[in-house]
Amino acid sequence: MWRIRKFGVAIRLSIAFGLLLCAMGVLSLSSISQVDEINGKLSLINGSNSQKFRNGIDMLGSVRDRAVALRDIV
Image 1 (cartoon, rainbow, N blue to C red):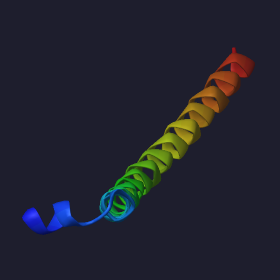
Image 2: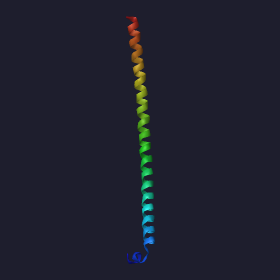
Image 3: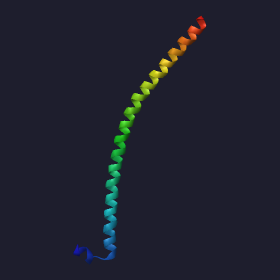
Image 4: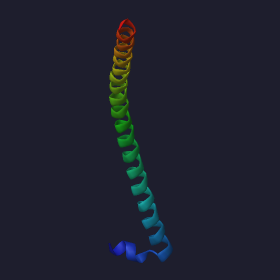
């Protein structure tokens, strides 16, 4: 701690700024990693939900076709 006081103000500010830049870099890398993980999970959820959605639309179309056919018979 005493060695730092021997440095000038400019050097102490440079060291502090460098430490802040390093901390921001670590935080950025951590954030990018977490966003990538979340993106993978959301893609998996979206893929399964879109298949269920397509199946629902197909069933709705089938029911509608049957209702129209039944209406035409009556």
